[in-house]
Image 1: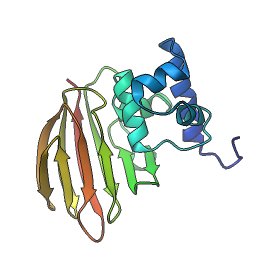
Image 2 (image 1 turned 30 degrees about the vertical axis):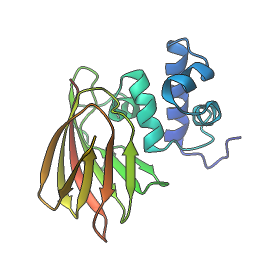
Image 3 (image 1 turned 180 degrees about the vertical axis):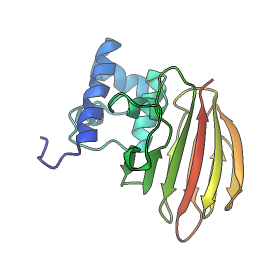
Image 4 (image 1 turned 135 degrees about the horizontal axis):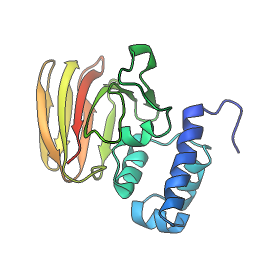
Length: 190
């Protein structure tokens, strides 16, 4: 059951996830089969009884053919052409130590977006598939060190280093610095 301290973003996100499932005409069981996420976890996320993790959202984005920024922008108000720093949406996955700030003004007709990521020291996020197959990503480390695994290739990035990749399979982002890492992620849908 929801408590009074439920994050309003989680509430709107849960409602949008339920809408997407309904739009596709899927039961919770069907979505569980397609995403590899348990029926109970999906149900709790849709009712905002739990804050979804980055990994869970990635699996759902893959099923629905959206990037995480697209999904998160769908739960925000219609954007202006400029998003002021104070108004940039921030989403946090406390379980994994990941903080994500959407820098670009969202727009459904545009293919590119900028995201600022923060991983706490020791944070490790693994995605079993891209949200959209063939997604182009550029990772530029602003502070700290980051290990990025793209399928079977591991890349060690330090401050100022930039990695360009096309994502077709699993990826993994790991903080490799004692103070954590801050990076810019440019995402371009195919």
